[in-house]
Image 1 (cartoon, rainbow, N blue to C red):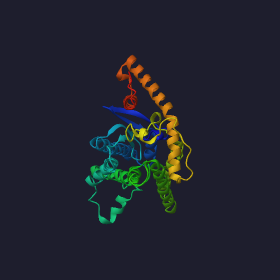
Image 2 (image 1 turned 60 degrees about the vertical axis):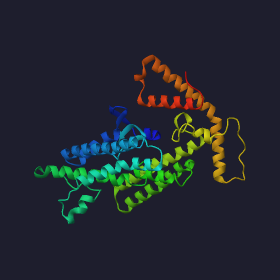
Image 3 (image 1 turned 180 degrees about the vertical axis):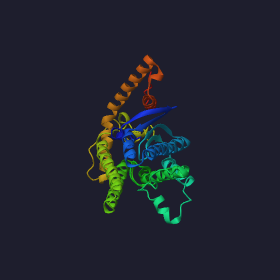
Image 4 (image 1 turned 90 degrees about the horizontal axis):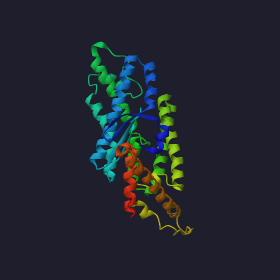
Length: 339
């Protein structure tokens, strides 16, 4: 999960399966009375349960494909629009795309498995309309069919929403992955957010034109999320905000490749293009901050090792265990082996 979105997505842990932490958003709790008020209480409770199960299966798809491609997965955050899995796909564009697409693919498989083929062609639109639930209440003589219909409707909405090319939805993450092959990695986050803002604005305008409050709300929320991301991306350009100032996405030698030796800062050549000037300033900022970041990494490692020495390895959270491994590998890579 994107750590910078945590403050917008309050959640609590419900279970831990091995190294995989399952968290549920407080928005799910807030959604329950809405469903119970909007629908008959039995239908509302069934809808909540089916939505929670569908989101969980969606995220499990991400987790399985991430591990299958050689990546990692440590956390699932269940939210009403599809959840956010803290996964790192294996190396390569294909691995990242299939890992991201795995979630919507699970929803598609469920839709195909329970597609209500017994509906007549003239009523098919009401089944495929994502803005309306196709039933108002359960009928005793066709309870299983109605449950299948609700299961289809929920997964159909999750599929359509997550295919939107808007971050942090799966469609937006696929767009970002594709942009990596065409845009310099240092610029791709900003550009992907800008694409998402344009797409979210179009969704909002479409909802306004059609007088569809649900679409307007969805587009507005996604627009605001990406606007915040844009502000934070700008801040990261001035001061790298990844873990302890390091970007681990390309391995532990990424800073060695991008940053010049400490103290070897030079004035930016005004004859260079705007992109080259920006990259040069960024290298200088990284070089100036590198020593402080290394000292912070060593301090954090000392704290974690002291906690292990006092309380044992089991006292560390999954996040702390991950940090311990990252910092240890980083310092070892840079020739500073911890004692």
